[in-house]
Image 1 (cartoon, one colour):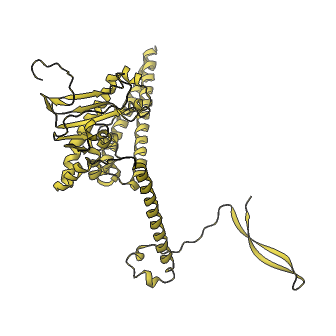
Image 2 (spheres, one colour):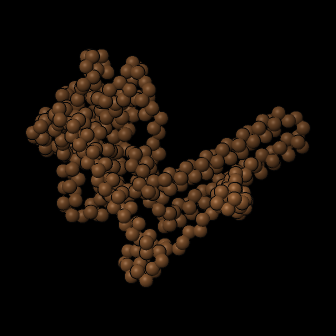
Image 3 (cartoon, one colour):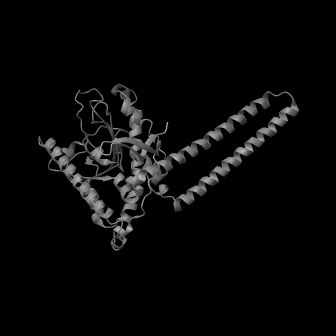
Amino acid sequence: MPNGASYSEAVDFPMQDGKPENILVFDVETLPKYHPYAIMACAATSNAWYSWISPWLLEETEDPNQLIPLGDTMIPRVVVGHNVSYDRARILEEYNVAGTATRFLDTMALHVAVTGISSHQRSEWTKYRKSKKSQLEQQEETMEVIQNIIHQVREQENEEQDIPKRGELGRVREQISQSMADFSQSISTLIEEDTEAAQEKRWEELTSANSLRDVAQLHCGVELDKEIRGDFMLSTPQEIRDNIHDYLDYCCSDVNITHRVYAVTLPAFLQACPHPVSFAGILEMGSSFLTVNQEWERYIERAEATYRQMEEGVKKRLKEIAEGARCLVDTPETWKEDPWLNQLDWTPKVAGKSRGIVPQVGRLVCFSPLSKDWLITEIGIRASCR
């Protein structure tokens, strides 16, 4: 800190010694129930920590439309964040139609590029994660039950007046304690073996969903407590003000974790995608913007209509291809020569029995006006099982 400077001081935007900071790790918090604008933000640089609180939250104005200033638009700077486009939408200078020299680096994009998860993998990954969490919870419950038993035996031992019985209780307590130690050691061994095996065999351990919590656990081994996040979904502005320091600490902790994720994912990205164009592409894509006017709603409608039209066209074409392939079922010499069709499973499917419906054979008796006679015909009918 410069001579005479206090531990904390007010600045118009992140700056040090009168110069704007050019590399920041950044995060914002909002109250979605009230409006989409930020109510607080935190940033960290190599020089200092910075925090911003919305004048609306502090009741200095009734206008919630408050944007976060970062300073001169022509100063080159890099802002690191997780899903940083969400944070960028709440920065004042980013609404300058002339553009800025600020570039945004998204740790979520770095994670996706290196160890991201595809949409069809998500359900299996979620299932595996829930199963693993359930196993850990069961182990913790087992340890807690054993500890309670040991505590009860110890209390009985202290209250027991009969010396032989007290000695017997002591031996029981020691046996239970030893059993708990053995159980804990076996669990630790299994976890280590499972971790080693998972690193080699299970793809679920090599990827994660895109939230900061999941990414931090994967890359940094950090378990984030996101319970306080629910306060921003449910709390009133007054409740946030009453505990403003706790919520600023929460925002700062997200900044800290984002920096730790950045320190891991950036080198991994540069190794996986070493060409400078790849890195430049991430910076450029994160800095684009789309100006809109009164035609925006019509544009959305036209885009949606075009999408639906193209989607129907694709479905129609796929149906035509499928019908064409179906006609080749009885001519294997044709589809076996096709490089695409021969990859399909051409085994005919056998229709299964309908649930609750069984075929029955009955007789239909009717009068023929031509032969003037009664005709008896056996027919197959379907009857519901009751």
